[in-house]
Image 1 (cartoon, one colour):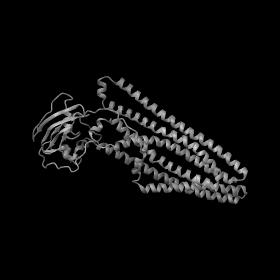
Image 2: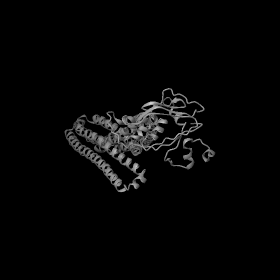
Image 3: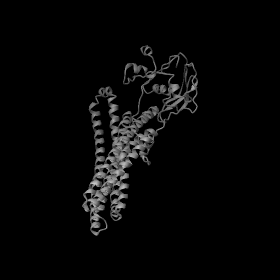
Image 4: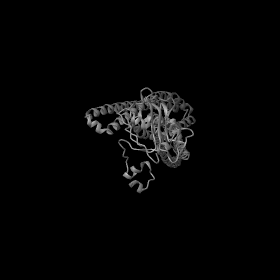
Length: 469
């Protein structure tokens, strides 16, 4: 307690279980939207510069068509030069806008990445001990680092490229329709033949990506466990066996990633082939229209450039779609953490502990079970008065550590009550309760940093004199 601390000694034990995750029906990437909407000005500038650069790029083919019809076909060099200078000016605007767009969306991406990592880490710190009993630290570290890093592509370049590509496709199709409705009919015929198989195949990538990330997390979890218990491994001479297990999981991770890459490669090849075939069909259709006199040579050139822009944008969309399917798997794993609610909940109106502290602890007919079936404690009753020293003695597994974990409310009792200074600990604020205890683990953890920082861990504001004492 505050006046007379109750020493707590514990040897924490964890149960390493791989969680079974059900895929969510909602699109996981929607979870990123609130993080992005925190920066409306940057997003607004990104969209503005993206529209400027896209409109500028769409203006160039129209100017090129005019240069062909009014310059080359009419054999007017002055018109060719005039159109050329206009195209250079438009290209300058496009270049500046594209650079600004890239900068702002990249900054937003990095900011969202930092915010997401901080949110996940803070949420993990707020979860109770039971969560860490059933989730390996190595796997959680993999999610915090690997999955967050993978999302960088979604909120950075991929998001910008997808948005720009969609605007380009819409703008190009609009300009194609204005240039020649007859040629646009060919695009309407060819587009579904490209889009349908691409979208269908891309959906498979999400499941593959999820398996890849799970395999990588499993590998990271095993490495963390084994490297954190090297003395145990060496004592039982398990180095070759554990190395073999690691090799098996590493190969499983490799095979999962190769399978995903193969699917990604098939998707890219499919888009390239279908896009090229559609372009050949479009050229044939356009040549026939020129021969029939329904379009001019300049209109055909202008239309083909728009078609190439739309085709390139569609290819970009397919690439981004593949990337986003992978990112969706990583986002889903992170949002599972953010959506997890602690099982230990504070009272809506917590009571205040008495000041000064009374220094009393009482277990009143306490029952407890970790899994709801096997009892660890049953009908436990004892009281520790102010100034008393009490030792819990018993064989390993008899419930000593569990008793002291319950005292700080790392878990909730199954039945009965625990009283500190006469108050049920379920009625107290967790921070108030735990600050009443001096806690020394059986194997104390040394954190990265200086010795003084480690000594100050429980009281960061402690003076140098207090640290020395």
